[in-house]
Length: 435
Image (cartoon, rainbow, N blue to C red):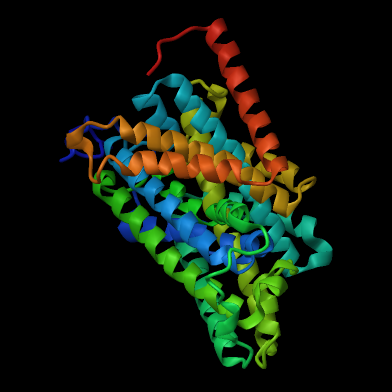
């Protein structure tokens, strides 16, 4: 076996992967932590308010629907990652299974959507840490996580582990404060209601909350940096998604019972509002601190994932080849990381958190729709789950995407159109075989 190879032909019949261009240092626990770092915090601290506004108490149905779609996407991503354990996620899967154009569209959707996610998390950090200094603090946060990522993927995983531990502790504090603060009322959990927006509101809430579940994509983008990717990536994706669903469910039920949907919808810090209505309101500053830490945790994993997809596209000359450079000592795609950080800073200076979430959700849902179509084309010996999960995932992604706010749909479609046009121009100028 060549040095750096992922291993021999896997049990699912996939081809032996190409030698890793990056250092394989992450094990299953590390990969799960990276996924948790990308998910925990995004939905709880940034998306629950808009979701409550769209669906009222029906946000719990939206959460369940988002989890179902995320689960279907996870089975597709896990199978594809085992067959194609390379950096790039669905950019690689679409390219290998469907053709070059579909892979490029997926990569463009991921890079643009997750760049918006990075900006949303940086702004969330600034808003919780010091509302009057939101944008300056957001810029500093982007610079800080970029510096950590440039230090190497092992350092990123260790930092994320610390951040995830803090976030889980704060979310546990929120649950305790909601139930033991004296304000919790099970009557507020009206599961028979779908909220003021009806079924459409529930679907919109699911689309917004899907933003919170998309972090497992970061695990797949680390395909060249995990040990034994054929086994590690599928396990890590499903473990991270399952743990996140348990946490989100507990926090969502607790916040609704304590404060009600109307209070959550009217607050830019819904979990702070849920804690503040009870006798344990003195814990609110700790929740604010936890939100800031959670946002940093998500931002750390997001910048790493976007940088690696950018690296993979550049290596295939779909983006400037200059971005495919790997640092000789840390073995990370340093130039891609720096460019991503610079673009995120630019977005932070002009963006709005809620608009960024909607835009990101639309593009990422398109990304996962392509992942599901790619998984549908796998041969029987490459499958780990039944084939029908893939069309369920495609349908779920498309329904949630068109249920998002109209502005998010139009902006996302326009940016994807620009990416498709650019690909068409490059293909005419320098035609190459698909694949």
